[in-house]
Amino acid sequence: MSGHSKWSTIKRKKGAIDAERSKVFQKLAKELYVAAKSGDPNPLNNPSLRMVIEKARSENMPKANIESAINKAKNKAGEENYESIRYEGYGPGGIAIMIDCLTDNRNRTASFVRSTLTKRGGNLGTDGSVSYLFTRKGVLVLDKKYDEEKLMNDVLELDVLDFISEEDGYIIYTKPEDFIKVKDGLVALGYDEFILSEVTFVANSYISLDSDTLEKAQNLIEALEDIDDVQNVYHNLEL
Image 1 (cartoon, helix red, strand yellow):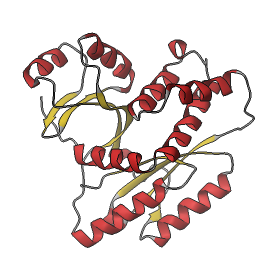
Image 2 (cartoon, rainbow, N blue to C red):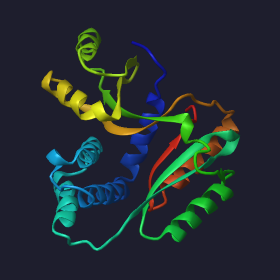
Image 3 (spheres, helix red, strand yellow):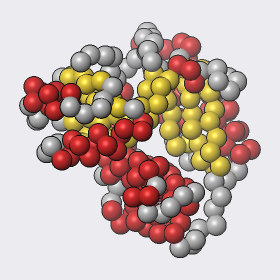
Image 4 (cartoon, helix red, strand yellow):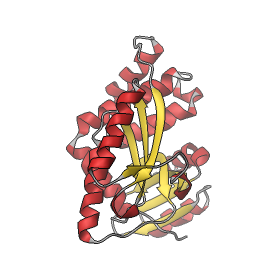
């Protein structure tokens, strides 16, 4: 099986998470709270919540933190009303950027996102201007410690979109609706150490930039990720 993967992008993301783990946990807690509040707080009956839990686990979020966020929604201890907003735009070199936010103040979030883009060489686009360049997929990354031939044969028995072997890991792509089933299938087969495990947006193709423009684009992405209301930043930058 073949395909174009972005393990370098994933590694960079994991490095950023390690550097600012507390902020990442705060964002995950918000995402867990919203998923639990908007549906059944029991993850067995709420696929959206289950997917956020899997994402939180892959980021090494403590079990107590996960349960606290869910219990806050279950016990109606929180009065926060978060709105999901997506912004689309462009960055240095014409890269496409899609920004997903959870906010209790739309005007504040719009101001932060717009000013960050403007100050760092980007600009906002209209709804749908870049979203067509991305596809929502389940992404599972396993360490190279597993035998490649056996893993490939096992993956062929599961309903996956693609399997990619790279120097630093194996990447498995699934349809969003098959993510949980595939992950459970892998765990049942003994593959239980995931470097990354989430449903996310993956670019259909990537843009390479010269070193100076690349640095500017990376700085913009990092600045957007640092905004409290921003949950995820998706882009098609080749790293």
